[in-house]
Length: 102
Image 1: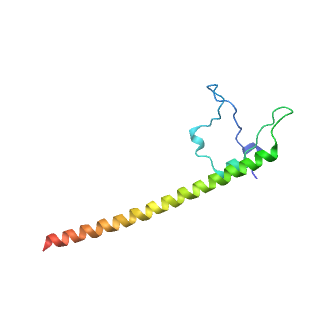
Image 2: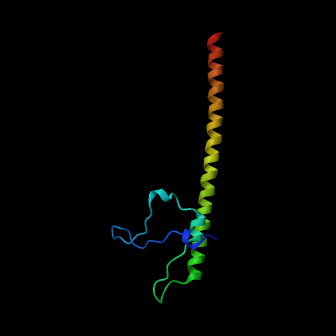
Image 3: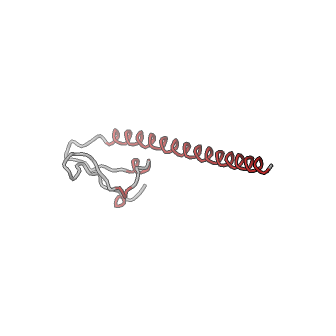
């Protein structure tokens, strides 16, 4: 678990006043550990149920982890296909140059 001072605050209102959460582009994409480590500031006597928030955040983190795993799998497949295409193109170029030399 990270120290409290290392956690980013949750913003409940955007500068535009639209009431949406915001973050800088420098923060990068949200990662599963960021969701799991997020703390919320209690609001008055009738705050949120901490157990419900934790269950929801764990679910969101699991979904994010699954998405990142799928993206990694897709990138690996794309790399495999690109390499196969390069090999095929090389073979075709070599066959073409051999046929032209005859």
